[in-house]
Image 1 (cartoon, rainbow, N blue to C red):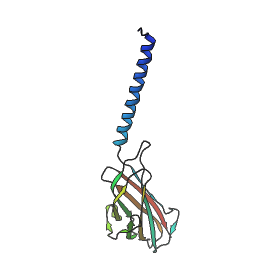
Image 2 (image 1 turned 30 degrees about the vertical axis):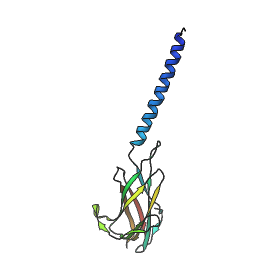
Image 3 (image 1 turned 45 degrees about the horizontal axis):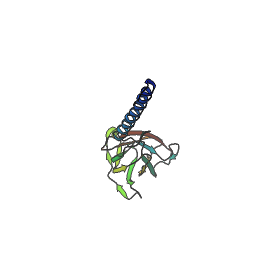
Image 4 (image 1 turned 45 degrees about the vertical axis):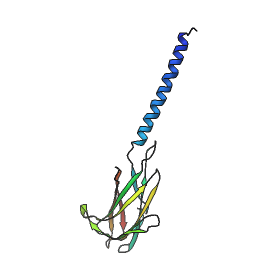
Length: 168
């Protein structure tokens, strides 16, 4: 049997293409399985909404798994710190599937912000979210006040967001 140079070139091209596709697939799997989780935080209350001074308000934060275009690593054991301007009086934090877990232990932290935290949240896939409700008494004086939310997980996720709310 006589094999031509063209047949050898086609066979070589085919083997090279299959090898390149396998290498790309293996690189994609390695990228997907070594990704660190990414989480985000939003304040679902409208920041355009003006609070009435001296009244209780409910602030609803949503912590969500951002992921990447190629997949999302689970974020395990997330701790969320909800920090309020010293003029606020945080009363209670609620979280869980039906807000059944509560925390009333308010402390003063960095920058004299008063904080309350949620612990042990788990977000297993992209787009999954957990809501945290914080009941707080609004400041007695009018102005614009800072609320800062920070979240981190034991497997490397970390984010911080600042929100500004007005009180009249």
